[in-house]
Length: 442
Length: 193
Image (cartoon, rainbow over all chains, first blue to last red; front, side, top):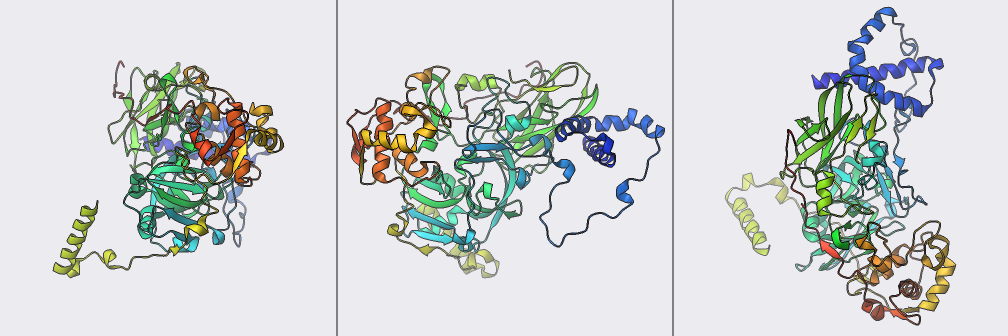
């Protein structure tokens, strides 16, 4: 039932786009079209089932132009791009917190347009500290040294000769949502939650190479360092490195994009994004952490009494409704598919509940397979909106039994001041009686 | 750890001797080893990390507050502003001590860094942003001395080197706590919550 409604909404949206394309008089700016489209997509199912039937009888269907002519030829070679009608679906730089330069900056994934658990590579969020380098893989070298029997160096072709593994994992920036916990600063879910993406990663376990180098039994920490202009580096506990940390060169079936660390990055499942060091050039083994700027002055959590929580790596269980979400508009009472994503750095998603009255009452949403460890899971609920003001939100439960907390519950344990990190609070959207969906965090 | 490996090896031995046909095919494959040996001396140019808690890895060289002031005016002021009080690109690098118990925490090297050698590590690997890793060790020590001096943490005539930089006492030395999450215990209430 739910699946059908979603599919019909999607078909109706495509039909609307084609009709517009055929009629030049219906031209609208991309931004305007995108805005309208969001609303139309949501009401697609109801339009088709109610007023849509009457409209179809009043007007005979013409054969669409696409069926009356040849399409574009198959190019000799090409890297396929999305339809020109999807031109508004873009990764966007942070414009809520505007940085004064764009090398140490970030761009955000359009989660409102992400239709499955996998983020297309061109829409995967970015966070860099000194811009994106273009590294020739034939000249890239990885070095492992420090507390090992034999320091080793590897070329990319060396690394790609090892048996590879592929796994699906989400990646989330520790600062995802930092603009929105004490005030409703973001309009869209792209702005509020877009430092989140998910992909299939291909590479080799770091443990393979550390075993080869012969790690000192006294080793406790490992440094990962990038070859970019920030030489970004982080200290990682050896248990995590040996347990499931990967050296990754593939993402969603192709080589990493430059902005994701081409030709090589670390990938540390379930942990804050910045520890998965991109453009990886060096792994150093030690018995103590380094306490670098990136793990003291940054990526630490403000705590009560002026303290800071350090080495808080795990991204805890979290969820958000992406459809409907901020900036969209519902066109009148009726049935709407409510959808979103849930994820946990500590395991799989076991349940997601949704509320329509701001958290007083909750109902269990349907989860969509696959239920993968530390990966996005889609949830949905068919909502019959009565046309009155509503406050919608989702609450996820992970395989450890941990329940996503409210902002108020987090505020009791931590200090919500300044650059709030690792914030996984329940995030509400308000729906006003005119159908407008807005950020309702406060 | 070691006994686990031993036990694993024993099991493998038993399996392969008792039921050779059923042995895991993968375990019999030769183990790939494609790393090429390299000496620590050949990694020296990349080996720039400093263990900031005790300054391990700090190189030889030294720099004074005065030298740092001159260098800052030439290479840093355009982004960080006069006296490092904030410029067109970045906010202040001075002050903020005492602000962490207010709602407006001011993060600067002076207020935030628990260990002074962080200044050396970070400036060496990242600055100036347009030409990172271009400063000599003497220049990095000088800039560390200057920024610490602006924050009132070393005297006007201070000279920083591996030893003196590691000895600077930072105000936020005991400002950090370790990860104790989960720190919430929300219940899955469904009605009349």
